[in-house]
Image (cartoon, rainbow, N blue to C red):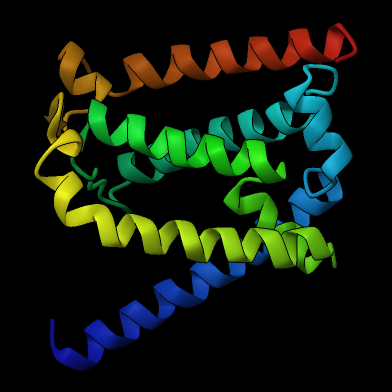
Length: 186
């Protein structure tokens, strides 16, 4: 592929990402996930709107990606991971979520919705957290981030089965959870 085609392809990917990001933000806002009260209700286990939105996105995205993969339209390239990376990422995410009541996606949606707490505290938190992680990364990458390294191994590869033998049961489980949440009025 020549240099012009690579640049055109990259620009198309960026535009598609922007387009779908705007749609996702719009849907987050319409679903109520940019509301502090809804997020607080989720943290207090009294309002499961956020869980329902995210599980719906997961099942839709998972099925869509694997259908496109089966048609040869996409290639999956998982990033390498480790349990240490997951713990550090979870802690950073959890601290930010606990302090402000937003995750990175809902911060973006809430900023677009005009919420000052997200615009000031959220954006500042993302910048400060990212800066601290970048400053500490050289030291972390030689230590805790390597703990429990599993590389690019996926669950189907670990189980040595066709991807659909994991995707279908997980999709059905998610749909069952969504059904039960709706049926219980949560």
